Image (tube, rainbow, N blue to C red; front, side, top):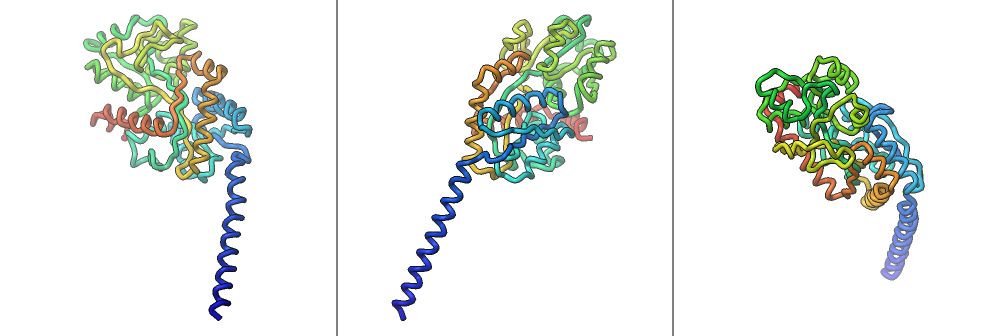
Length: 331
């Protein structure tokens, strides 16, 4: 009897091992075959916007690299927070990705962590940083202000104003950093988009516009706008005549950035696979030139360093939150 039980045990063990080996043999090819279906890249902008164009550029480059279609899915609204929430709650299988940006990850996490329906960085698996673009101080082509120094000096004795694309947006807080560093009080006038803001600036209703530089570089080259200064550590090769705020003695480190993240829990081999192919895409002349032409800079910053970058950016925005500014943003 003992022998019979022992044999039955051995048979059971053998069947168990065979089942495990069989499962592994099925799972291994499945993982190795990724991606087996189209990948969805969720973008928090409507079609045609600056972020959407970058999203489509990366989607196209990744499609070529991974051998599978990457489809852009536009989910605009709430400054990109809707898109971020969709991805945070998606199945972590590598088939739903987010074009992350400073607004829906860093700014939202810094200014209203209790109001957004996702947590940064807990709900996301970082894949890699894609690019950074400076924010800039713009005035109309016929403005009396020829330099940022003149504009800020005038703000010490006159009541000046600046436009932004929305209260609490990355550029708005960037200009608040400029105000704090320069020791000036300038009236903030929020708009729903750059079009109305520029129209009113050209019409003299507001004195300046603080916004991400890249989408407006074309209008600067055409002579419609004047770019007085940009954020960041150094001048941009696409606009070499424009000084940084740092050159004026004002340290304004924030930029508009875009990166790629997946839902938390996405298998590490899949995340690494995507990170490698993103890096490959950023190294191509086609992608690099497209990013650089409008004063942005490609940033091949992989997983762990990208995670650190996001946390540091959250801290940068938090440092600018005075009680008055926080009240303006959250009311």
